[in-house]
Image (cartoon, rainbow, N blue to C red):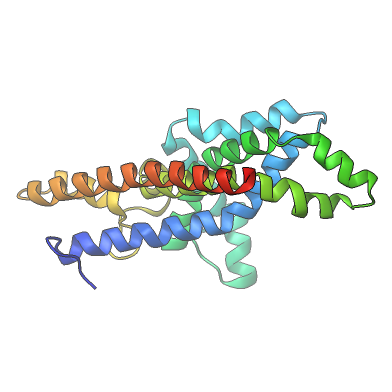
Length: 232
């Protein structure tokens, strides 16, 4: 598969980025919803600390996250060594590792959007449902989750866009391997360091801008459409 005006290497990097972003959001979304609900609906000791840890990838250098993944999930890391010895699973230097890095970097944006949406849900509706005999799980799936759908979709789209642009944690954890971990940002970096790669770099910059703007517009469009249906 190739796109017009793109070389095979550029197309490969674009499709790999989309694949990694898709899986990072798909796997991370259930955890994002659970954490957002916990922060929006529960008060507990250490809540501020958990909130800070969730948003830490937004404020620390991405290389720090990549290094922590390296020492944790690398072949010599405590978790990575156990995964390999017990199940022969290796994520370092693979696209799965890139998806993990992208998912962690995008997770705070997802959680924040979903949490704000859940906090906007009128809790009196949930209380009324509970007084009518609904279980907590039933209230969540019948009231909280549907009314939070605009934020969930917005968070998913924003996380997808963030995962597409992930660079620092990815290159630190899984390196820059063509066809395996060389995503769109890594390919752009490679072309800027390669003599004669200016044309490819410019094309990838344009693609990055288009994808980012499209994601922002799509998230706003989806949120408005879903909100109108809920309010109708």
